[in-house]
Image (tube, rainbow, N blue to C red; front, side, top):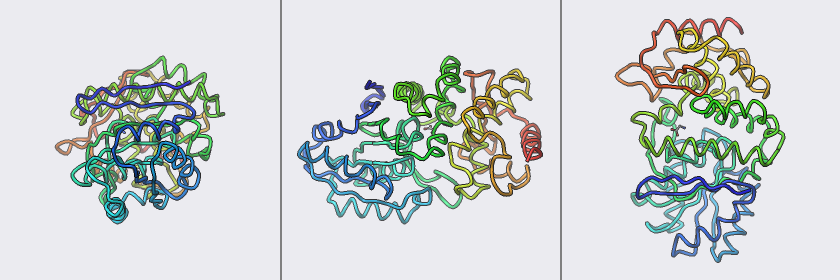
Amino acid sequence: MIETVPVPLPGREYEIKIGPGVLAEAGPRIAAMTQRKHVAIVSDETVARLHGGALQSVLTEAGLTSDILALPPGEATKCWPELERTVEWLLAQKVERGDVIVALGGGVIGDLAGFAAAILRRGVRFVQIPTSLLAQVDSSVGGKTGINSVAGKNLIGAFHQPSLVLADTALLETLEPRDFLAGYGEVVKYGLLGDAAFFDWLEGEAPKMAAGDVAAQVKAVTRSCQMKADIVERDETEQGDRALLNLGHTFCHALEAATGYSDRLLHGEGVAIGCALAFELSSRLGLCSQEEPSRVRAHLRDMGMKVDLADIDGDLPPAEALLDLMGQDKKVVDGQLRFILARGIGEAFVTSDVPRDAVLRVLEDALKQR
Ligand code: GLY
């Protein structure tokens, strides 16, 4: 039950291998990529404890020694001091231009280790071994790497494609249910943005996937990665279509900023709420029928996910302040907010032509329901 999704970027082609047990491929695949018999692995303390031993064993079997840098878990690790620590550690590991670094972890580790790989000796190759659902379907694929600034998330970074992605779905078993569901926010996003049949399938099968059905997990991760690979192939540096992957993210980033990037709202939870708001906005602008946002919300509810602003604990700022936080988003072009809206499920498009008042009304009404 192993799937392979190619990412055919000219000169930087790579494969995403998906399925239970693909971690075992790390040994032979990495041994074939480098002359060096030593591998530097960047991870976090939780993931290193759970899966570091298994990775090191398969590397040993392939004749490779390895060391792990285990960073603190959590979004706060995507910062300058941890990046500096990582880069200095990699240099102390004597990583050279021809070597391969491994990122073993969720989105935080993939983004930070990928950025470290992008800048170390002006760029070394890296392998992504994503351990969270969110990382398997989104952040480990497509080459966006970076850290956060006090001014906002992911504002410092580089495009640097991995050389291989090993998405071992068996590792999802160790995720907390809340983290699994947060990752599911990114899965459902793919159906909503460009594949109505996938969304239909998720409505029926996603509960099985959440309950641990391996075939459903492999199918969901594979379809998500295929869609991402296809978009990244068309538009690697987000000049156009890649922005579709940001469905729900303009709302999400404002909510994450308003909740201090804390456990009050995980990124994937914000994406799910943001998708529901993006469909609500699309419907109010007459782009899609009123049934579409209801269907989106009903599915998210069925999955036990956060759907409304009322599902976020604690206070939120007023609608005007949330709108200002949206202005910090990377997707602002010439001061104009760019939104991903939809003409229906599976039919998203990018636009800057959204009346400010319409967004404000959606936020005001969503806040009133709290
Ligand atoms: N997560 C959005 C992108 O990779 O473009």
